[in-house]
Amino acid sequence: MPQGLRDIRRRIRSVESTRKITQAMKMVAAAKLRRAQESAEAARPYAERIEDALRSVAADASASRMPLLRARPVKRVGYVVVTGDRGLSGPYNANVLRRMQQELQDGGEAVFFAVGRKGRDYLRRRGHEVAKEYIGIGDYPRYHQAQAIGEDIVAAFESGEVDEVRLVYAQFVTAMTQHPDVQVVLPLRPPEGKSARQYIYEPDADAVLETLVPHYLYALLYRALLEAKASEWGARMTAMDSATRNSEELIRGLVLRLNRLRQAAITNEIAEIVGGANALQ
Amino acid sequence: MAATFALSVVTPEREVLSTGAEMIILRGADGDLGVLARHIPLVTAIKPSVLVIKREEGEQRLALTGGFLEVRGDVVTVLARSAERPEEIDRQRAEEAKRRAEDRLQQHDSDVDLERAKGALQRALVRLQLLEQETHSAV
Image (cartoon, rainbow over all chains, first blue to last red; front, top):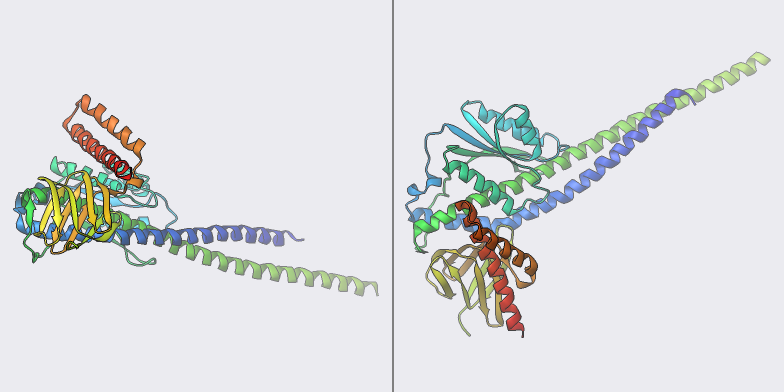
């Protein structure tokens, strides 16, 4: 067998095994995406109720006195950047980081709270100040992880280390589309609107507001973690799907070339035999 | 039959319970609190405590580790940091947590740690209290 044929066969085998891997990763991503969406769904009732409660308390309490709600001149901005711990998720991480980079363009001091290894590594490489990092959130974010991040940024905000905190993460639109978004989370803006009900508060509206606000923030962060995770799996699924398709296309091309070469080789052989036979006559 | 109201217990991660109830008892910011149907609209913080839910068919208890209570009309929502059924509680873990928290309180370091230890102790105590109550009612 000529050298060329063997090379092509080997190539086909190699692409084939890559295809098997990307195919399996796509299936895994699809399953994890579903889990992530279910978690986001399960988290909704709490998020809605706490938003509701905050809306009415904020209307009744002297919100301006709450430190976490009060805006002040911004010198240093804290960024919570949510990326994945792993790659192989198409443009997912890069898109989030690009969106963050846009934010940074207006200058000013910035300090970072990096969620996910990809974001942390990127920030470090660029010599940014990473105040805190949260690696190993895992495939299924838990509320206490969001709370830990929340406690850290509240501490940084209260101590005056930062004057504003922005959250950068990929909103989940569909498995194919994720929308990197920036949101100011501190100072916190309570949901607008007036509630129709007259509540009584125990011990009083200000005290309830004070305990409610951090929890609202944690719920907000938890939701962002869940959405980012769904986005990550969606992006990974899409990336693996197109990788699988590319492999298939590559294999088709290689098989075609293999068959052509093989036929050429056979034709050649026949021509030689016929030539040899003719020479004998 | 006593009048009932709709009760839902939700944690950040999921809805734990959605049921009709005649009365609930828990510990609010100002002390123990019972809620019956047609209670006045109320919002309060919840301290770590055992939530007692009284229904016609019997009582149910959950360990709450803080959160909020919202009463509006005949819809009562417990927004709990966590809400555990007795069978979900790991006695050993709770006891260890209690011991750890007590140790920390002994060596009072900075204020933040003290607050944390106090919270952890309360949560552990509530879990153990619920287990205690369940074993008694089972006898």
